[in-house]
Image 1 (cartoon, rainbow, N blue to C red):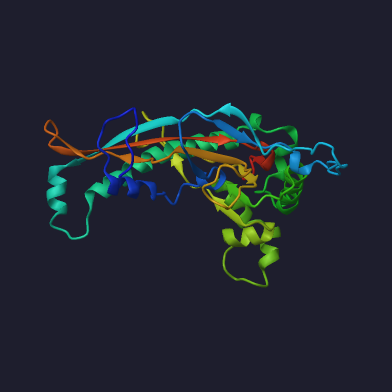
Image 2 (image 1 turned 45 degrees about the vertical axis):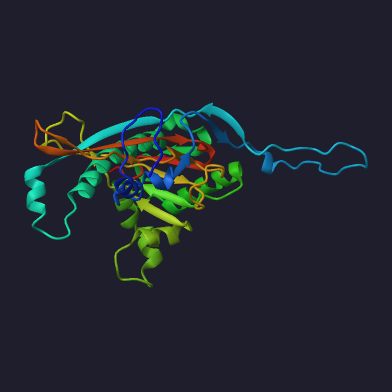
Length: 315
C-alpha cells in the first residue's frame, strides 16, 4: 500500500493507485521532453549541470600537492510541486448495467478519465515551457518566416535541424536525440519534397515519423496531437492545438527515472503518486466517488540542450 503523507489521512487504494501510476494517454507527448522522475519530497533543489565535463583541466599532480576537485552538478532553485485533485463519479445505475457485461471495470475506467483530464493540464504546462521563446537564448531558437517555413517547398528542414543540432552539441557536448512536432509541423515534414525525395526509391508508403527520425539522424520523432478547450468554452468551439505549429529539438537521456542525469527537462513527481483513495458513496447523487490526486511539475532544467523552431508548419 502506498504510504500516507502528512497532508491527508485518506485511505489509499493500492490497486487503483498502481493502475494510475502505469497509465499514460498515447496522445500526450510531454513525457518525451519532460520524462517523469520520482522525487522523495515536495521541496528540494533542482540539480543543474555546468560545463565541468567540457573544461580542459590541468589534472597533473606533483608529489605532495593537493588534488584538484570537480563538483558533480549543483543545486539551484527549489522545486515547488503542484497538486491536482479530481473526483470521478460513477452512478450506481451505470455500475448496475456494467455488472451485466463481463470485463467492464468502471472503477479503473473512472480513474482513466480523471487522469486524462489531469494529464491534459500537465501536457499544456509542459508545452508552454517548451514553446516560450524567452526560455531560450539567441543561439537556441529560430522563428521561421516566409519561404523558410517547412510548409514551403523552398525551405530546407534538414539543414535547419543539422544547424540546430550543432548548436546543441557546441553547448552540451551531445547531439539532440528527440524532435517533437506540432500537428502542422509534422504534416509539413511528411509532405516536404526534400524528405520525399530521400525515400522515393525505398518506400512507396507515406512518410512516417520513424522515417523522419532516420532522415534527421535522431532516435525519436514524435507528433503532439493533443488539443484543449478552455474550461468555460462551449462544445461547439474548435479546440486549440497544445503544441501549436512549433518544433522542439532536444537531448533527453533515455535512462529513465533518474533526475541525476543532465537533460533538457524533467517532470518531478512526488514518490508514491498518483494516488487513488478508496471510493466513497454519495447519497445525494447515488454515485460512487473516486478521488485521484497527483503531485508533480515539469521543469526546463537545461535549455541549452534544446532548440525551439517557431511557426515551423504555419502556412
